[in-house]
Image: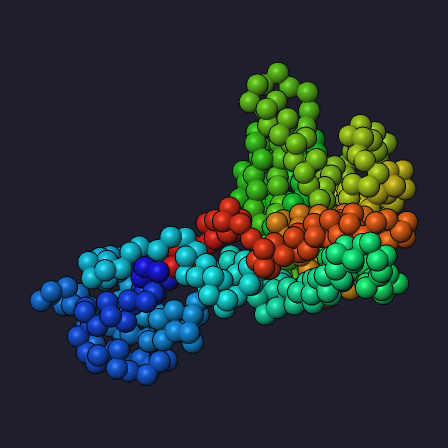
Length: 457
C-alpha cells in the first residue's frame, strides 16, 4: 500500500504543526529527507531532532516521532514531523515528502487504514471523527465512550451468540429428511427476546444521542416587537440581533448557540408573525412557521402589558400540537406597571393555555436563569438510564433493520415456522449488525464514513 502524507494539525499560522506520513515506505522516505539519525536503525516510539532537506536546501529544523508498525495508530510505519507552523514551511515539508515518493492522503485515509489493519472497528473509527468534531463536554464524553468500546462490544457478543444458533439452524437443513433439531428453540427464543430488548433500548437512545450531537433547536416566536431579539441578545450576552421599536425589524431568522451544562442549545430568533404586504417580511414569516415545526422547544413571547385575554387568544391562534414543547414567555415586565399584576397574568395565561408560563425582563435579566432551567427541564437531556447512546444515523438504520428481522425470527419460532425461513431472517439481522462494526461492509459504506473525516486523520 502506497505511503501517504498530510498535515495532521489545523490549517493556519501556529507555533508548531505536525505533518504525518504513513505506509510501508514511510521510514525509507523520511531517511531520504531527514538530516539526523538514520530512522530505520532507531527503536519505535522514539523522538529525533534534525533538519528536513530539499536537496541542499534546509526546509526547517524539526523533531520527528517514529512509530513502527504494527505498534502504531493504524498499524503501519508512521512518521510525525513536528515543524514550525508557518503555512509556507508546512507546504515545503509536504512537497519534500511527495518528491521523495509519498502521495497526498485522502480525507480519513489514516484512520481508514487503521480499520483495514484491524486496529479499530468501524464504529470506533466513526467515534474518532465525532471526538474531533465535539464542541462540548457531552459530545466529547459520548464520542469517547464509543471510541473505547461503547456498544460495539455488546453488538459483537450478541452477534456471536446469534451466529452460533444460526449455524445450528443451517445444520438442521442438511438433515431435513431425518427431522432432527440441533438448535434448542426455547434457548434461541430467550436469546432473541433479550437481543430485541437490547436493540430496542439502543434505538430509543438515538433521540438523546442526536440531541447531544447536533444541539437542541429552540425557536423564539411571537408577534412583532414583543422582545424576541432582546431575549436572544440577553441569552447570548451579546448584540446578535438588531433591537428596535420599529415592528418587523427581523425579516429572517437569526441563529446562534449557547452551551448549558455541556449541552448545546440552538436559539433561533424568528421574524415577528403578523399580516403584511411586504414581500420580504412575508417570506421571513413563512420561515418562522418552518422553524416552529423543526424546533424541539418553542418560546412563545407575548407582551405582559396586553390584556391576558388577548394574549390567550393570540396564543391559541397558533394551534400548537398538544405534544409540542412550548413555554409562554411574558416579556417587558421592566417597570412597575409590568410587575404590578405580573404574577396574576402569568397564572391566568398558564391556566387558560395549559402551558408553562413565565414572566421575565430581558432588559434587567430578571428570571432569565429560571427560563434556562425550564428549557433544560423540557429538553430532558439526562441519560434516562441508557448504558449506551446511539448518535450515528447509519447505526440507527442498521439497528432498526436488525430489530425488524429479529421480530420476524421471534414470530417464526413462536409459530413453529420452518427453519429455512427463520435462517433467512437471522442472516438479515446478522448482516445489519455486522455493518455497524464493519464485520460486514461495502466499499460504498467505507467511502461514505471516511470521506467525512478531515485530511490528516
